Image (cartoon, rainbow, N blue to C red; front, side):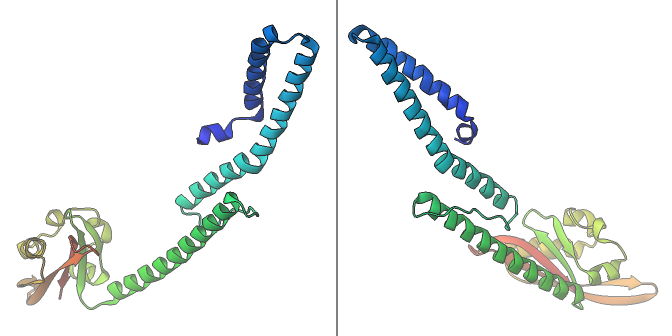
Length: 221
């Protein structure tokens, strides 16, 4: 459909011309006056061409523009607008596309604000946090956790948790949180220099709206 819309006017005029010639060949044996037949065919050709031009300008081009704008919205450009006045279906389409762009823009702003607020909370909490998806890949490690283990985000993000979290207690806690779909609490100790430090780890399963487990968030304190 998209390719059809983008075809030039000359392409459609060629089709009309071919159809006009075919009609002339079919009518030629049964029409006595050839001049009248040719005149009728020429008039018919120009009428169809004018109608085609009107249709392209008022329907095909706006529809092509609407497709391009929807593509822009799909790519995340919510500032675009489709301007077409009228009470027909294209006018309705224009209103719906602009409403969609505005709603997506508002949703994007709200999502960004919520993400920034959540990031601020996560980064400033006194507990070390690790966010793991349902496949076991780490998506986020907060500042406190990095402070405890002295590594950087790139040492964790994108890796499977059992590849980069060395303590076995982490593995057990995460596995049980996924398995039982409930909070799992464990404790462990480790030496920081000559001092023995006690830590508590809590595995918290994360659910989506339909309730399947979408990930796990071990909390290290």
